[in-house]
Length: 147
Image (cartoon, rainbow, N blue to C red):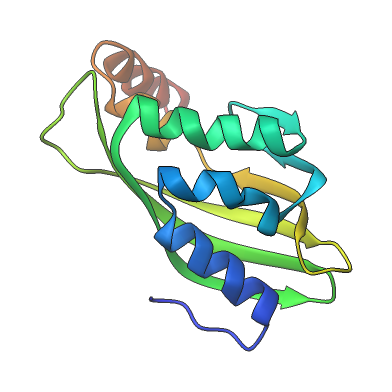
């Protein structure tokens, strides 16, 4: 565990994400309200079944996905976590460990569970540039935008 906080709600969430496994998805209601909202660069969903499906897809699409929480803070019902998402592609370069760096904004319900979860990370730099063919195009576009 890399991250420690005195906010028990935030520590509970950080511990959950760092230890997350496919079996834990059955208990996601312990961490999210039934009407929770989740948004990331690829998904915008509401409710436990939809949130569970987002995380379940992660285990289908990637090898050995895991989160490493690197920091965080909270104030009132709002919280913020920074993290590294570590994985291997199943379809492409399976030998190379990939890392996506990002952050999560959380809003807690009165009972301490998450009612809003929004992930922020740069899909172009952190993911697309690492893919065959698409990666070359993305790197070229980035160079063109910087000239």
